[in-house]
Amino acid sequence: MSLRKLSRYSLALYLILISILSLLPSNDLPNVMLFPNADKLIHCTMYAGLTFLLLTGWPHFFISNRKLLIVIVIAFWGIVMELLQGTAAIGRSYDLKDELANILGFFPGWFTAYVAGKIWKLK
View: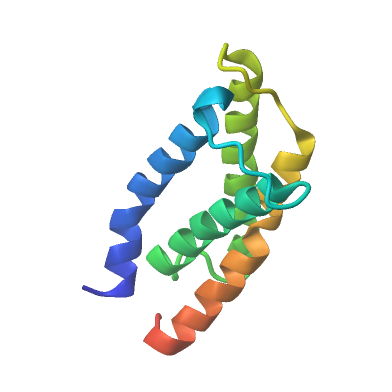
């Protein structure tokens, strides 16, 4: 199976995973403090994965100036998840720093997709 097909099939599952993890009640999440603000690194990593799947799944669509569209998609999905956290009775709240970490996830995701594209010759 090609990286493109694998990324496309994985995207729906990945969005479900991000949604579940974002909307789980806070008392259902492990309370492990690796370092201050470690959750921001987790947010960035999750949205880097989303960027990677979008770029490797649809490399022709997200060319040149359309890369901004991915930032918009990631920001939108992150905002929706953060707003749902703030409105749902799940013991979570909206956090602007989480949203910024989500958006910053574009950069490592883009870099990883760029390297993967060079290795697997995505065109």
